[in-house]
Amino acid sequence: MEKLAKETFPKTIQVRAEIHAPLFALVGNPTGIHQVLLNLCINARDAMPEGGSLLLDARNAVLERKTIPGPTGLVSGRYVVLTVADSGHGMSTEALKRIFEPFFTTKKGGKGTGLGLSTVQGIIKSHGGFIEVASESGQGPPSNLPARFARMKQFLTAATNPSPRR
Image (cartoon, rainbow, N blue to C red):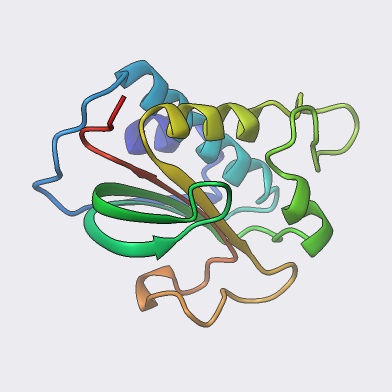
């Protein structure tokens, strides 16, 4: 994904990938995971019309009773955590509440279908995972994020369970 973004995104966007290998082996649909990353990268690109920084981060995590939104509530286990972070303009609190709704978009002028993030959420859930988002409209990153995300304003983190229970 890093190569694709560097070759096709405007040169005013600096793309960096941090892959913390070896990652847990994922059992799932590679096309679906590619679609997740592509949708998140395109949203990040669109949030930076004047340029900025895009960070793709992949790492393992062992979660113990992590609270997540939705009916699942708590999760535990081994996860591969994919984070797409950008230095774009951020989203309002009102937009954050609706970003996973089908057909909701923050893009102006009829651009975007509003299906990207709802699709991402569905793919991640089908892989036994969850997605979290943090965004600070017009401000720096949320204070609880690691230093590697300095200068970033939006974060979408998808955690996928390497061997989801079906």
